[in-house]
Length: 352
Image 1 (cartoon, rainbow, N blue to C red):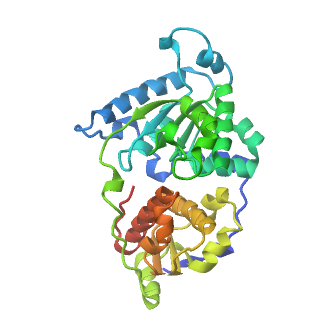
Image 2: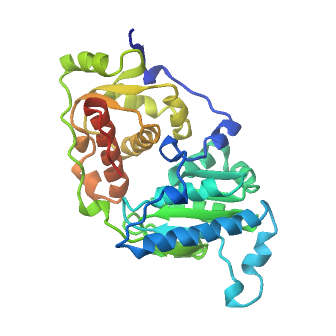
Image 3: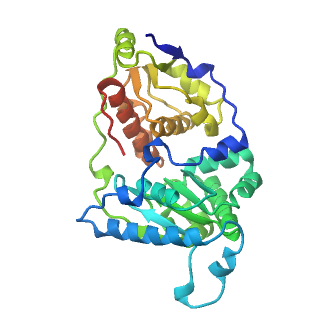
Protein backbone atom coordinates (compact mmCIF):
# COMPACT_ATOMS: atom_id res chain seq x y z
CA UNK A 1 0.00 0.00 0.00
CA UNK A 2 1.03 3.62 -0.38
CA UNK A 3 -0.04 7.06 0.80
CA UNK A 4 -2.15 9.27 -1.45
CA UNK A 5 -0.69 12.73 -1.09
CA UNK A 6 -2.64 15.92 -1.76
CA UNK A 7 -2.15 19.62 -1.00
CA UNK A 8 -4.69 21.91 0.64
CA UNK A 9 -3.12 24.75 -1.30
CA UNK A 10 -4.31 23.09 -4.54
CA UNK A 11 -7.91 22.97 -3.35
CA UNK A 12 -10.36 25.77 -4.16
CA UNK A 13 -13.70 24.36 -3.08
CA UNK A 14 -17.05 25.77 -4.10
CA UNK A 15 -20.09 25.21 -1.90
CA UNK A 16 -23.74 25.76 -2.81
CA UNK A 17 -26.24 27.29 -0.41
CA UNK A 18 -27.87 23.89 0.06
CA UNK A 19 -24.51 22.30 0.87
CA UNK A 20 -23.73 25.04 3.38
CA UNK A 21 -27.03 24.56 5.18
CA UNK A 22 -26.75 20.76 5.10
CA UNK A 23 -23.43 21.03 6.96
CA UNK A 24 -25.14 22.73 9.94
CA UNK A 25 -25.27 19.59 12.06
CA UNK A 26 -23.12 18.24 14.91
CA UNK A 27 -19.65 17.08 13.92
CA UNK A 28 -18.60 13.45 13.95
CA UNK A 29 -17.54 13.84 17.58
CA UNK A 30 -21.14 14.49 18.59
CA UNK A 31 -22.93 12.61 15.84
CA UNK A 32 -24.60 10.07 18.14
CA UNK A 33 -24.72 11.72 21.56
CA UNK A 34 -27.90 12.04 23.60
CA UNK A 35 -29.07 13.21 26.99
CA UNK A 36 -28.68 9.59 28.13
CA UNK A 37 -24.99 9.50 27.17
CA UNK A 38 -24.23 12.68 29.13
CA UNK A 39 -22.68 11.80 32.50
CA UNK A 40 -23.42 14.53 35.07
CA UNK A 41 -20.91 15.01 37.86
CA UNK A 42 -22.73 14.00 41.08
CA UNK A 43 -20.83 16.77 42.86
CA UNK A 44 -22.31 19.34 40.46
CA UNK A 45 -26.14 19.25 40.71
CA UNK A 46 -26.43 22.02 38.10
CA UNK A 47 -25.37 19.49 35.46
CA UNK A 48 -28.31 17.15 36.19
CA UNK A 49 -30.62 20.16 36.37
CA UNK A 50 -29.42 21.27 32.93
CA UNK A 51 -30.34 17.88 31.48
CA UNK A 52 -33.85 18.12 32.96
CA UNK A 53 -34.34 21.66 31.66
CA UNK A 54 -33.07 20.77 28.19
CA UNK A 55 -35.34 17.74 27.97
CA UNK A 56 -38.29 20.01 28.75
CA UNK A 57 -37.06 22.54 26.20
CA UNK A 58 -36.76 19.78 23.58
CA UNK A 59 -40.37 18.79 24.28
CA UNK A 60 -41.55 22.38 23.85
CA UNK A 61 -39.64 22.70 20.56
CA UNK A 62 -41.10 19.42 19.33
CA UNK A 63 -44.63 20.65 20.07
CA UNK A 64 -44.03 23.95 18.24
CA UNK A 65 -44.27 23.87 14.46
CA UNK A 66 -41.61 25.57 12.39
CA UNK A 67 -42.24 29.06 11.06
CA UNK A 68 -44.44 31.85 12.36
CA UNK A 69 -46.93 31.80 15.16
CA UNK A 70 -44.54 31.70 18.10
CA UNK A 71 -44.13 35.46 18.40
CA UNK A 72 -47.60 35.96 19.84
CA UNK A 73 -46.85 33.50 22.63
CA UNK A 74 -43.41 34.99 23.16
CA UNK A 75 -44.40 38.64 23.55
CA UNK A 76 -48.12 38.36 24.11
CA UNK A 77 -50.00 39.01 27.34
CA UNK A 78 -50.54 36.59 30.15
CA UNK A 79 -49.01 35.79 33.48
CA UNK A 80 -45.31 35.59 34.15
CA UNK A 81 -45.59 31.82 34.29
CA UNK A 82 -46.86 31.80 30.72
CA UNK A 83 -43.93 33.77 29.36
CA UNK A 84 -41.56 31.60 27.32
CA UNK A 85 -38.31 32.99 25.97
CA UNK A 86 -37.10 32.32 22.49
CA UNK A 87 -34.16 30.26 23.59
CA UNK A 88 -32.02 28.63 26.21
CA UNK A 89 -28.42 29.53 26.99
CA UNK A 90 -25.86 27.16 28.55
CA UNK A 91 -23.25 29.09 30.51
CA UNK A 92 -20.22 27.35 31.97
CA UNK A 93 -16.49 26.80 31.73
CA UNK A 94 -14.63 24.59 29.29
CA UNK A 95 -15.01 20.86 29.69
CA UNK A 96 -18.39 20.69 31.45
CA UNK A 97 -20.20 19.17 28.46
CA UNK A 98 -22.06 22.14 27.00
CA UNK A 99 -21.49 21.07 23.39
CA UNK A 100 -22.54 17.52 24.24
CA UNK A 101 -25.79 18.86 25.70
CA UNK A 102 -26.44 21.21 22.80
CA UNK A 103 -25.88 18.39 20.31
CA UNK A 104 -28.16 16.15 22.39
CA UNK A 105 -30.88 18.80 22.17
CA UNK A 106 -30.43 18.96 18.40
CA UNK A 107 -30.76 15.19 18.11
CA UNK A 108 -33.85 15.19 20.35
CA UNK A 109 -36.04 17.49 18.26
CA UNK A 110 -37.49 17.03 14.77
CA UNK A 111 -36.26 19.10 11.85
CA UNK A 112 -35.77 21.30 10.10
CA UNK A 113 -32.99 22.36 12.46
CA UNK A 114 -29.43 23.69 12.43
CA UNK A 115 -26.35 23.23 14.63
CA UNK A 116 -23.17 25.25 14.16
CA UNK A 117 -20.63 27.42 15.90
CA UNK A 118 -21.10 31.15 16.25
CA UNK A 119 -18.38 31.70 13.65
CA UNK A 120 -20.10 29.34 11.22
CA UNK A 121 -23.30 31.40 11.40
CA UNK A 122 -21.46 34.65 10.78
CA UNK A 123 -19.68 32.94 7.88
CA UNK A 124 -23.04 31.73 6.56
CA UNK A 125 -24.30 35.32 6.48
CA UNK A 126 -21.09 36.36 4.74
CA UNK A 127 -21.50 33.67 2.11
CA UNK A 128 -25.26 34.00 1.45
CA UNK A 129 -25.98 37.57 2.46
CA UNK A 130 -28.06 38.53 5.47
CA UNK A 131 -31.52 38.34 3.92
CA UNK A 132 -30.94 34.96 2.26
CA UNK A 133 -29.53 33.56 5.50
CA UNK A 134 -32.56 34.75 7.45
CA UNK A 135 -34.94 33.36 4.85
CA UNK A 136 -33.15 30.00 4.89
CA UNK A 137 -33.22 29.67 8.69
CA UNK A 138 -36.67 31.13 9.33
CA UNK A 139 -38.45 27.85 8.58
CA UNK A 140 -36.37 25.94 11.14
CA UNK A 141 -37.72 24.71 14.46
CA UNK A 142 -34.36 25.03 16.22
CA UNK A 143 -31.10 26.91 15.65
CA UNK A 144 -28.24 25.74 17.88
CA UNK A 145 -25.29 28.11 18.28
CA UNK A 146 -22.17 26.63 19.88
CA UNK A 147 -19.34 28.75 21.33
CA UNK A 148 -21.39 31.95 21.26
CA UNK A 149 -19.12 34.99 21.53
CA UNK A 150 -19.04 38.54 20.23
CA UNK A 151 -15.66 39.66 19.00
CA UNK A 152 -16.38 42.99 17.36
CA UNK A 153 -19.17 45.56 16.92
CA UNK A 154 -20.08 44.23 13.48
CA UNK A 155 -20.76 40.75 14.85
CA UNK A 156 -22.77 42.26 17.71
CA UNK A 157 -25.15 44.07 15.39
CA UNK A 158 -25.25 41.17 12.92
CA UNK A 159 -26.21 38.50 15.46
CA UNK A 160 -28.62 40.81 17.22
CA UNK A 161 -30.52 41.36 13.97
CA UNK A 162 -30.34 37.71 12.96
CA UNK A 163 -31.70 36.41 16.24
CA UNK A 164 -34.39 39.06 16.44
CA UNK A 165 -35.66 38.16 12.97
CA UNK A 166 -35.50 34.43 13.68
CA UNK A 167 -37.46 34.98 16.89
CA UNK A 168 -40.07 36.91 14.92
CA UNK A 169 -40.36 33.88 12.62
CA UNK A 170 -40.95 31.53 15.56
CA UNK A 171 -37.53 29.85 15.56
CA UNK A 172 -36.31 28.53 18.91
CA UNK A 173 -32.65 29.19 19.72
CA UNK A 174 -30.18 27.36 21.97
CA UNK A 175 -26.63 28.53 22.59
CA UNK A 176 -23.51 27.69 24.58
CA UNK A 177 -20.81 30.05 25.77
CA UNK A 178 -18.32 30.75 28.53
CA UNK A 179 -19.76 34.25 28.98
CA UNK A 180 -23.14 35.31 30.34
CA UNK A 181 -25.34 36.98 27.67
CA UNK A 182 -25.17 40.41 29.31
CA UNK A 183 -21.36 40.23 29.39
CA UNK A 184 -20.83 39.30 25.74
CA UNK A 185 -18.19 41.45 24.10
CA UNK A 186 -16.44 42.51 27.30
CA UNK A 187 -12.71 42.95 26.82
CA UNK A 188 -12.93 43.01 23.03
CA UNK A 189 -14.40 46.37 22.14
CA UNK A 190 -16.33 49.25 23.68
CA UNK A 191 -19.24 47.03 24.71
CA UNK A 192 -21.02 49.90 26.44
CA UNK A 193 -21.48 51.57 23.05
CA UNK A 194 -23.44 48.54 21.87
CA UNK A 195 -25.33 47.80 25.06
CA UNK A 196 -28.71 47.93 23.33
CA UNK A 197 -27.76 45.22 20.85
CA UNK A 198 -26.14 43.14 23.59
CA UNK A 199 -29.26 43.46 25.74
CA UNK A 200 -31.41 42.28 22.83
CA UNK A 201 -29.31 39.14 22.74
CA UNK A 202 -29.47 38.67 26.51
CA UNK A 203 -33.25 39.03 26.50
CA UNK A 204 -33.63 36.15 24.05
CA UNK A 205 -32.43 33.50 26.50
CA UNK A 206 -33.28 31.63 29.65
CA UNK A 207 -29.83 31.09 31.18
CA UNK A 208 -28.76 27.71 32.59
CA UNK A 209 -25.55 27.83 34.57
CA UNK A 210 -23.58 24.57 34.36
CA UNK A 211 -20.95 24.32 37.09
CA UNK A 212 -17.89 22.10 36.98
CA UNK A 213 -14.15 22.13 36.68
CA UNK A 214 -13.14 24.91 34.32
CA UNK A 215 -10.60 23.84 31.70
CA UNK A 216 -8.92 27.27 31.98
CA UNK A 217 -7.89 26.43 35.54
CA UNK A 218 -5.98 23.39 34.33
CA UNK A 219 -3.90 25.27 31.78
CA UNK A 220 -3.04 24.07 28.30
CA UNK A 221 -2.09 20.44 27.66
CA UNK A 222 1.56 19.80 26.85
CA UNK A 223 2.12 20.17 23.13
CA UNK A 224 4.16 17.30 21.64
CA UNK A 225 7.51 18.26 20.23
CA UNK A 226 7.37 18.90 16.48
CA UNK A 227 9.31 16.52 14.26
CA UNK A 228 12.48 17.33 12.40
CA UNK A 229 12.04 17.66 8.66
CA UNK A 230 13.78 14.35 7.98
CA UNK A 231 11.40 12.59 10.39
CA UNK A 232 8.20 13.72 8.73
CA UNK A 233 8.15 11.29 5.83
CA UNK A 234 8.94 8.30 8.03
CA UNK A 235 6.29 9.23 10.59
CA UNK A 236 3.63 9.69 7.93
CA UNK A 237 4.50 6.34 6.32
CA UNK A 238 4.27 4.57 9.67
CA UNK A 239 0.98 6.14 10.75
CA UNK A 240 -1.03 6.62 7.55
CA UNK A 241 -0.15 3.94 5.05
CA UNK A 242 -2.94 3.55 2.50
CA UNK A 243 -4.66 6.77 3.53
CA UNK A 244 -5.19 10.23 2.04
CA UNK A 245 -2.89 12.86 3.54
CA UNK A 246 -2.63 16.57 2.73
CA UNK A 247 0.98 17.79 2.90
CA UNK A 248 1.61 21.55 2.83
CA UNK A 249 4.21 24.17 3.67
CA UNK A 250 2.74 26.12 6.59
CA UNK A 251 3.44 29.59 5.19
CA UNK A 252 1.79 28.74 1.87
CA UNK A 253 -1.19 27.21 3.64
CA UNK A 254 -2.00 30.24 5.80
CA UNK A 255 -1.58 32.45 2.74
CA UNK A 256 -3.96 30.20 0.80
CA UNK A 257 -6.63 30.49 3.50
CA UNK A 258 -7.01 34.19 2.70
CA UNK A 259 -8.45 33.22 -0.70
CA UNK A 260 -10.93 30.64 0.62
CA UNK A 261 -14.06 31.84 2.43
CA UNK A 262 -14.18 30.32 5.94
CA UNK A 263 -17.60 28.83 5.14
CA UNK A 264 -15.71 26.54 2.71
CA UNK A 265 -13.07 25.26 5.15
CA UNK A 266 -15.16 22.18 5.91
CA UNK A 267 -15.19 21.33 2.21
CA UNK A 268 -11.48 22.21 1.98
CA UNK A 269 -10.53 19.27 4.22
CA UNK A 270 -13.13 16.83 2.90
CA UNK A 271 -11.94 13.30 2.17
CA UNK A 272 -8.69 13.53 4.15
CA UNK A 273 -7.37 11.13 6.78
CA UNK A 274 -4.60 13.41 8.13
CA UNK A 275 -2.70 16.64 7.47
CA UNK A 276 1.03 17.30 7.47
CA UNK A 277 2.49 20.79 7.85
CA UNK A 278 6.10 21.62 7.15
CA UNK A 279 7.88 24.36 9.10
CA UNK A 280 5.09 25.67 11.34
CA UNK A 281 5.82 29.26 12.35
CA UNK A 282 4.35 31.83 14.72
CA UNK A 283 1.54 33.77 13.05
CA UNK A 284 2.13 37.49 13.51
CA UNK A 285 -1.00 39.05 11.99
CA UNK A 286 -4.36 38.96 13.77
CA UNK A 287 -6.49 38.50 10.66
CA UNK A 288 -4.37 35.55 9.56
CA UNK A 289 -4.52 34.06 13.06
CA UNK A 290 -8.32 34.28 13.22
CA UNK A 291 -8.68 32.51 9.87
CA UNK A 292 -6.34 29.81 11.12
CA UNK A 293 -8.49 29.38 14.25
CA UNK A 294 -11.46 28.55 12.02
CA UNK A 295 -9.41 25.92 10.19
CA UNK A 296 -8.30 24.44 13.52
CA UNK A 297 -11.95 24.14 14.58
CA UNK A 298 -12.92 22.36 11.36
CA UNK A 299 -9.96 19.97 11.68
CA UNK A 300 -10.99 19.20 15.24
CA UNK A 301 -14.60 18.64 14.17
CA UNK A 302 -13.41 15.93 11.79
CA UNK A 303 -10.76 14.60 14.21
CA UNK A 304 -8.01 14.84 11.58
CA UNK A 305 -4.57 13.98 13.02
CA UNK A 306 -1.74 16.45 12.40
CA UNK A 307 1.97 15.77 11.95
CA UNK A 308 4.15 18.87 11.79
CA UNK A 309 7.66 20.24 11.83
CA UNK A 310 8.80 23.69 12.92
CA UNK A 311 7.35 25.27 16.05
CA UNK A 312 5.11 23.52 18.55
CA UNK A 313 1.46 24.56 18.47
CA UNK A 314 1.70 26.39 21.80
CA UNK A 315 3.91 28.86 19.91
CA UNK A 316 1.74 29.31 16.82
CA UNK A 317 0.20 32.56 18.19
CA UNK A 318 2.11 35.50 19.64
CA UNK A 319 2.12 36.16 23.41
CA UNK A 320 0.14 39.34 22.72
CA UNK A 321 -2.58 37.31 20.99
CA UNK A 322 -2.72 34.82 23.86
CA UNK A 323 -3.38 37.62 26.35
CA UNK A 324 -5.53 39.88 24.16
CA UNK A 325 -9.21 40.23 23.45
CA UNK A 326 -9.41 37.02 21.39
CA UNK A 327 -7.54 34.87 23.89
CA UNK A 328 -10.44 32.41 24.34
CA UNK A 329 -10.33 31.61 20.64
CA UNK A 330 -6.58 31.17 20.64
CA UNK A 331 -6.51 29.02 23.78
CA UNK A 332 -9.18 26.79 22.31
CA UNK A 333 -7.28 26.53 19.01
CA UNK A 334 -3.99 25.66 20.73
CA UNK A 335 -5.73 23.02 22.82
CA UNK A 336 -7.39 21.45 19.78
CA UNK A 337 -4.30 21.58 17.58
CA UNK A 338 -2.29 20.03 20.41
CA UNK A 339 -4.83 17.21 20.71
CA UNK A 340 -4.69 16.55 16.96
CA UNK A 341 -0.87 16.61 17.05
CA UNK A 342 -0.92 14.10 19.90
CA UNK A 343 -3.18 11.92 17.78
CA UNK A 344 -0.89 12.30 14.80
CA UNK A 345 2.31 11.46 16.64
CA UNK A 346 1.20 9.41 19.64
CA UNK A 347 -2.21 8.09 18.66
CA UNK A 348 -3.70 9.86 21.70
CA UNK A 349 -6.31 12.63 21.54
CA UNK A 350 -7.58 14.79 24.41
CA UNK A 351 -8.80 18.37 24.39
CA UNK A 352 -11.75 20.61 25.16
